[in-house]
Length: 429
Ligand code: GAP
Image 1 (cartoon, rainbow, N blue to C red):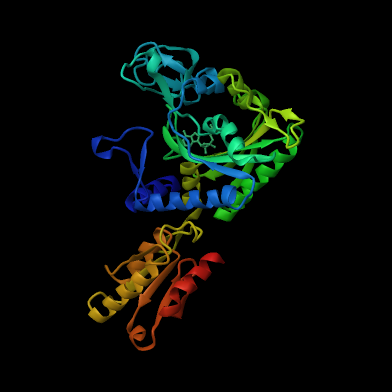
Image 2 (spheres, rainbow, N blue to C red; image 1 turned 180 degrees about the vertical axis):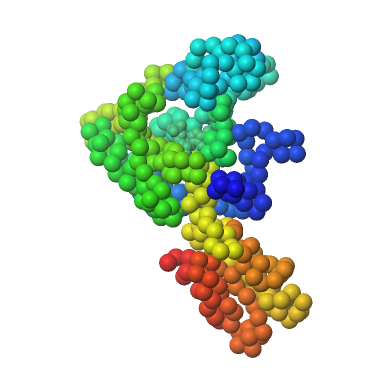
């Protein structure tokens, strides 16, 4: 098995990620997150929210609706050819393919001739209202960003921020990707964490550099190895329709270097478009009321699912007989696992449960008394639990437990009354 297959297998076997609708044969490009996947995702989102919103005075949070007025997507350019995949359609079976996935000039499925390359829009359509006709047509959002632009005035009117300031949002986005794949790397339903940072036009270059570094630092804080990260500057001819310049942060996935984070200079494109289409001028007025301008925007945009995949890849290692998911403890689904040394000694089991319930009040923890202790350690290593706590006969005498570290396998004895504080201190270090 290569590393990609090993990670996909671990994700399924241990309850991180399941293929969607599996008992019906699956549904391409959709995934379900199991108990450990949800926990890992929540931890990623929480850390992003802390760094990008809570710790700052200049960023405001938002949670907007997924379905919005369809005019928004016309204004943003998403219903046009800007948000489209260049594809070739088979003249026989009408299946569509990306040119780079084709080896010859005929349909890989039915062998018929392929049409010339055309652009196919990837917004997901839906209908709102009692009649399913063109007037009821709208879209599931293709990015969270547009909801931020259309709320620009609401944030100004309620919080009166001074430039530069940002609006941030975490939420689902949907794209009818023609070639979803590479596990959760490219899906049709995914989550984005986006910041639109509004700036004075003249500080565009300086802010762009600042946010590129800020995002890279954040990835290092999450524990991604620097050697597996790099910047990639988009060539001018490949820029998205809204962009005056974009740098991606790429990660070295098991299948090669690919984008996890796009940092784009969106200029005043979006605010101007929405002003034009809505008839409501989206401007910024300096505090003294003198200077009215349309701010420029720097947009760092990252996918939660893709980031989760990179974190699992980066953390995965085989160490002799054991497989270790060396996640940063702050990301680990469980911070501690609690075991009685053996499962057939009532006194040990009940003491272990008592200690487990105490720890669980403070931190996400799990109890395990199945199989032998060695197997339990390995089982926790594989899902990234940083500390395993064993209750043994000495515990009954001296109120200490062993704490085993996932990465070093070193064991330490700690008074169980101090355990929660001990673990919290380790988490902060
Ligand atoms: N608002 C800008 C925007 O949406 P993007 O480069 O299309 O830009 C930003 O998407 C990020 O969202 C990507 O870097 C990636 O992490 C994530 N993303 C985009 N499409 C995705 C997909 N089909 N599946 C999973 N993640 C995706």
